[in-house]
Image 1 (tube, rainbow, N blue to C red):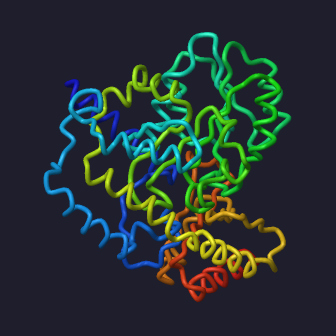
Image 2 (spheres, rainbow, N blue to C red):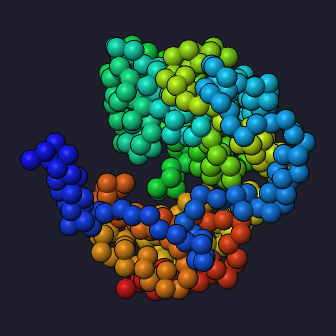
Image 3 (tube, rainbow, N blue to C red):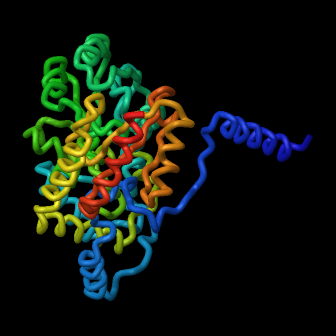
Length: 376
């Protein structure tokens, strides 16, 4: 058998294994369905007013080119990008910021470059895959603590060696719950560890984010903000000290070797930040939608609703949760079933995302379905 045939046989075998286990993934489109699945919490990705502002703003820069032409360290840097970073840092109450092409690449850059041999990265067991992958690329020791469990975290802090970094999300993307940031930061301070917080799903939905809401902006070693969720754009920024920014520019391979963002993307980020600042009512409107969802499901006592836009409804078993998703699709509602390996077997769930543009009627219809399904 040729090398190509041998490789193809391996690929076929792995894909067939996934199909047999009910884990085969494929792309789909959801344009005509009521959206309870996307991360566009504030509706900025589909905001016509913001889109018109972007179109007008592009005309103000007739000399801007379409591509960035190279990495930031070669031909891809600009005064516009550096000013945007300064404004992002100021908005979040940080000393400096560094832009990345995505939240995934930002976490990959941060966690692959920080820890040396003998150092330790302690992460919540529910942390995003990008943190796990980044830490695997680095040289430090990796430890996990039980989700949002302070005792488990302290156990790991006691055995950490070298410089210790603790990684958490402020708002978790699968369960929708919040990290006890103040208590975690207190433990980090007690054990001389450095806290890194991923604000991907909290930024925008909770204004400037949960780090700011907890008054911790000046106590966190690094905070990551992504723009593909509530901001409705693309890209991410790592914020922290100027020293950290300079270190990442010199040692973070995903930054050094990636083509920089094009001008249009930078402009979109700037306008989206301004739109968020000018429309402080948006997080309040989202909170109102979340409250309606909570009220509708309050009769189901065994369901714990969350304070953020991500609501996780456990329906154990791949068959059962996929069936619920298909039944919702028949009602013109899109909610994705989440199965392993994204979540542990037995914790399959419907991941519901609430948005400012979901009507009260749509939320009530969704909740009526859930009440019927969960009571059976």
